[in-house]
View 1 (cartoon, rainbow over the protein chains, first blue to last red):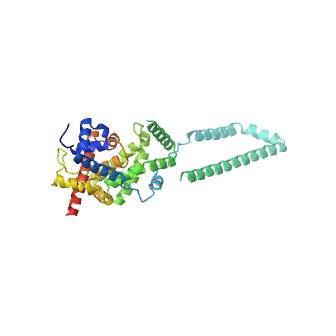
View 2 (cartoon, rainbow over the protein chains, first blue to last red):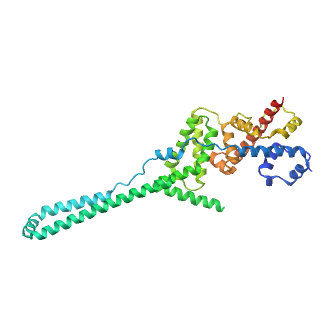
Length: 151
Length: 197
């Protein structure tokens, strides 16, 4: 049987982690009013700290930080640029080397054929432009929806 | 254990989303950890204006270094580390002390209260008005003690997690928390006795 009172460290340990306290000390606590009072005081102190209001920022931290985040870096479109340059080069070289043949073909071709080819080219361009506009509208719509959901 | 796994999965999902360019996922990370960062900045920094700058700085640093986060700890612990180090850097810059000048052996000077008188007083001590007194006493602790006490009792972090955040040995964390609680108890008793007289 321990007769000396528990020291402060033992009392705190008993309140925080009772399973860590030895059986001898527990027996002493059961019979000692002084130690019981000390334990009760520490229990109230623990509860008092726990019940303190948690601090909160009085500003919208999320918005402030999100505003300052750097824009994600986009990869440089090397592939697109290479394909475009190659296509332009191909067309130019074809025009230079086959100009005489192409001139002869155009001159000998019937007017109806040329008109048909031009009409087809215009129609294809029109539909491509339409597709670009639709894609743009779809992306804007998705972005607006994402903003609404996340914010 | 299951909760820890769920949390790690959730951390991983959020971090991957941010690294793939989803800025709003970073907003979710902020909302999830803001309480911990507030707790640390309020306890370590006294100037409200500086708190605002520091809180933003913490998350900008986290965003910048997120690709280096290896999931060896919880995301909140990692952000807590950044917050602690940012506050520490601020205090060093301002030449402010983080801890009290207790003796090297860690003993707190005993006040001259008679033990019997103290016990009588203790019985009546903790009333509702104690909350205010306790708040004032916590505010008077040095920044590190305030922070450790709040992380343990309010944020309910383990000693190991607090040690990870503060880069202090676990034993030191336990010792500091013990000393902080003892200081609080002694100061409250002393104040209560003075009020009675």
